[in-house]
Image (cartoon, rainbow, N blue to C red; front, side):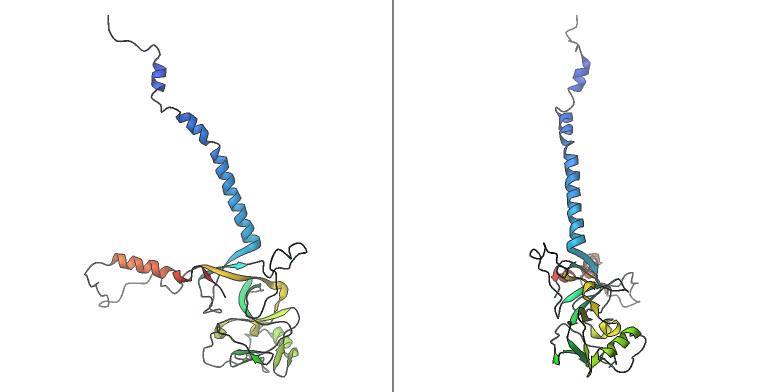
Length: 276
């Protein structure tokens, strides 16, 4: 008779090789899936609320606000400061009207939104002499403004003018400007704002198309959250023959080239820069 003892039930012996409690652990994690999905949905809802009612991203596409805002700057603008207050929310949020020197985002027929700096408030008497703004007979300090090119342009550097400067100025605005001009000064009507770009020689602003209505102002910029270096050449070809110099240590230089590309891809120092 054999001394071997047969297993009366081989099936449990096979089941015994499964890690103990593995199925129970799997089932225990099942409720965590809906919880994670619910948490994700809450995050999405909060983000959508913030982007809809509080802040909104914006990309600077032109040089009109240089050097305050550069081409390639991505910024968040506040949609609440200039919003019309309600009876219940007036004491909760610091609503106010735009002030002189504020940078504002506003709706405009073309393109849909623009960003400029407020120079003239309702009731102000305004003129521009050699590119510099005078409000109520006083030259306002403009440390943010860049003046140029040096070539003088009528209608841009001397405003308001008496001679129509050309098709770059909206004809309807030109007629309105003549009606509001007295003694070489333009009076800003109630509920309107006169805005200029900081880069005075390269800005399409109130000098060319007129005032910004109060109800068109939608926000003010808060912070630059990213800045893409648009001046970085993309797809540049190899240097001309004889111009390439080997590294001093005779290495191929791939590490340095990669570091230079990463560094030149973005303006890293502008990230989280507060806009003034």
